Structure formats: structure tokens, C-alpha cells
Image (cartoon, rainbow, N blue to C red; front, side, top):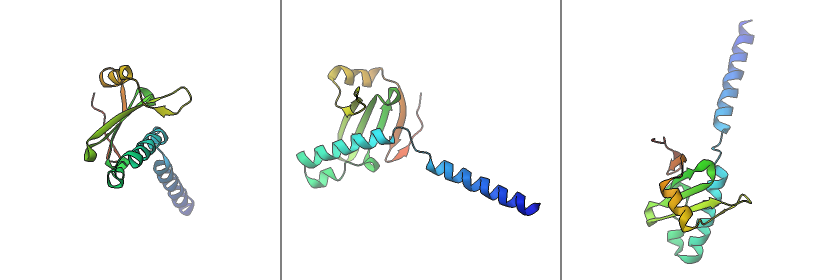
Length: 122
């Protein structure tokens, strides 16, 4: 009986660890898509050295309105940009009105700094 209890506890513990480790941020795919787009832009328009700085580990990332808008900031190259989710699910650059909305009225739902999620301060 003790062996069954020990084995069961070990199985539940392992399952819990696997579930916790496998859980991904629901915005990962969108963030990675925007970073990839920015990296390509920098490779085509700036030096290779600068383009190498355009990666998630160097960014401050803010997601607004349940993923409708994403703001990327790369402090090492003093650059920031925003993206909006289009009707087809892809991300593109927002209009100036949309940028103003992001800055002043959009609801921040996720914040990440240098690849690590941050607590959102209300």
C-alpha cells in the first residue's frame, strides 16, 4: 500500500512539474512574429551589429487590449515601435491615431523585460 501511495505521489508531482513548465504565454507567437519582423527590418536597413541587438532578450515588451497591440522597445539601440493586429491575424504598423490610443488609452495586459514577465502595476 505504501509503495502505491509513493508511486502515485511521484507521478502527480512529475505531471504537475511538466504542466507548469509546458505552459506558454498566450502572446508568445505574436511577440515572436513582431520581433522577427523588426529583426528583418534592421538587417535590411542598418548594420549587422545593430540588427543582432533586436531580440527578445534585449527588449521591453508591452501587450495591450488582449494582444491587439504590441509595443517593442530596444534600449540598447534606443528604438521603439508598435504593432497592431490586423483582421487576418498578422501584425503591421499602426496609424498615428492608433499609436496615440496605445500610448494613452489602451489597456496593458502583459509586460516583459529582457525575456522575463513583469508584474503589471495598476
